[in-house]
Length: 190
Image (cartoon, rainbow, N blue to C red; front, side):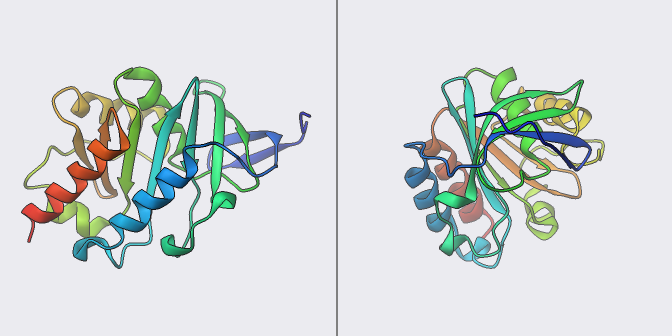
């Protein structure tokens, strides 16, 4: 049943198809990955680690959660569609979407080979990684089409990009591959 109420959020509008908890079979895999990433020494104190995965024509993404070890099925949204020109996000799930949700949607839909994205939002981590992985040249507001285009430009030649003054994004064709990318970069920084 469609909820006709529109909720404003960060420069885009969110329209809920339903506010029911998602039951996507990928949720346990993402929860396990987030908890595993939180065991890496460099990431243990980072609260903003989030993951999106392509799910058919939809996308699954976790919402902001201050304690990633306590993440559960209520902390996920299924993104049904996003229109970057109308700035309209169509979602299923009980919570508000992250500001970065449109960027993940655009990346997943622009790059067929991208099935999983891990984003770490921490300026200190970004500064540590910017010497070993490509960095966006321009700082755009979070969640905008301009930011997505800047990230996609860098993703032409890499599977990992520092988002200027924001964080780091890793992409790949499976969650396991992206987890390994994160672990390898963190290991290189030791």
